[in-house]
Amino acid sequence: MTQTIRLTAAQAMVRFLIAQENDAGEPLIPGCWAIFGHGNVAGLGEALQGAGDDFPTWRGHNEQGMAHAAIAYAKAVNRAQAMMVTTSIGPGATNMVTAATLAHVNRLPVLLVPGDVFAGRAPDPVLQQIEDFADGTISANDCFRPVSRYFDRITRPEQLLAALPRAMSVLTDPAECGPVTLAFCQDVQAEAFDWPEDFFAPRVWRRRRPRPDTAELAAAVAAIRAAKAPLVIAGGGVLYSGAGDALAEFVTRHALPVAETQAGKSSLAWDHPLNLGSIGVTGSSAANAIAEKADLVIGIGTRFQDFTTGSWALFGNPDCRILSLNITGYDAVKHGALPLVADARAALEDLSAALGDHRAEPPAPALKSEWIAAVDAATAAPSGNALPSDAQVIGAVQRGTDKDAILLCAAGGLPGELHKLWKASRPNGYHMEYGFSCMGYEIAGGLGAKMAHPDREVVVMVGDGSYMMMNSELATSVMLGHKLVVVLLDNRGYGCINRLQMATGGESFNNLLDTARHAVPSAIDFAAHAASMGAIAEKVDDIASLEEALARARASDRSHVIVIDTDPLATTQAGGHWWDVAVPEVSGRAEVRAARAGYEAAVKKRNA
Image (cartoon, rainbow, N blue to C red; front, side):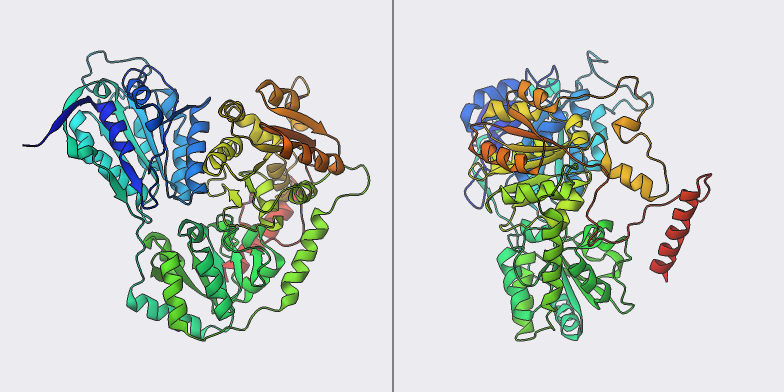
């Protein structure tokens, strides 16, 4: 006879999650972020409190922020673990939709457990419940459906017997990986059920490493052998697969030049002679020069986002073919690519063995040396009293940070400059959220990365616009004792979009604080604000002072914020490529009409 144990559905969920492990012997779900409301405090709140240190619960200050911290943790450990995040049923739940989308775009695992309305419907409409006039089964949590890799609504306790293993399967599947949403009806959380004890037996979820199909492998080998000017593009899948060493061995043995996407940067040390740096719109002159002439582009673990491909205008050789090595078939066949569907590490090993002693013509060393010289010039300390550029701040941070540190950033102008200029020495030393380009990820993401790697320094670079959107997890970092070094660049607005606005012929409008429709000029004291949340905070006047402050920050015992004013217009001119941003066909501004003519010429060239 099957042995059973009587638990509430919430207690059963927590007990099940505690029993799940990854193949490194670590908890698959190491804990839960929670902000409680009426939809989860009585059920899940009681279960989480009862679990204690067996399943730690951390309190955030913003539902989106704590979900970002959970996602950043998963990214920092290369998807080996995923955190749970729970909220109440209304705005707490919908606050997480942005984070779910971010995880979906970036193929990152997170377990989202928002409370839901009463399955029994007796008190309908309950507080915070939306009412769809045509469908009584809809709740606010249905917003998660298009941005979840797996969605389920738990309306009976015993549904967890099927839903939880399915959730774990998605979170650990390298091809299906992404956010899972289990909308947990609040009355069901508190209902008891006699659970089979073997449901809570320890289970190990092993990372699959599917090897390539023999026919696809043979076609890939033939394509590489035939190529006269090949280029490897390393994407985030290299890191998620733990394939950094395999990539280095593969490209070294076969003399293949490498460029890196935002997600793939740090998969190969910056000073490897075959690493030509960033690719595409924010690419290096070296990588883009090779890409423009390449007759075979070998994508490894990349989605081929438009910033990577220069809106598909970068690859200028009419004979260019795409070979896409990807764990996901969906990504492997984009733009008519020759697919190689497999784990990156396994496929690189098989490719290298099959290629034998084959070697391509290595790139001219001058390409890389000239680019590094341009990087060093852009990031050098300025002379004079002008406001520093983002690049000059990056240079100071690079000089003041050790090689083991993790540099973390997200949306705005900084990602483009960092993609070009940051010299990443160790895998995962460059942590960029640019798939969803989500402002506000930075500080919360830094907290998640620090939780994943408490022994590594985490340096967060953030603009004033992103800081204003979401800064509350700075207080959480102080409260939890997870120290961050935050460099806040204040260019008084959304400088990146202001530059784009002007580049497309528009007048500076509604992006910079000083040109927006404000009755009172902005005078935000970011250092005072950060200090009010418990961080050590200071404002510096120039690059030399920034470097001194970075030394103090590294020695601090808690999160340390350094604020510096920067030039909103300056940007690194070296490198880069065209990006498809549609310009109005009709405008009263001569500048817009001129920009439209340039745009039409660029589109015609791409489509030729």
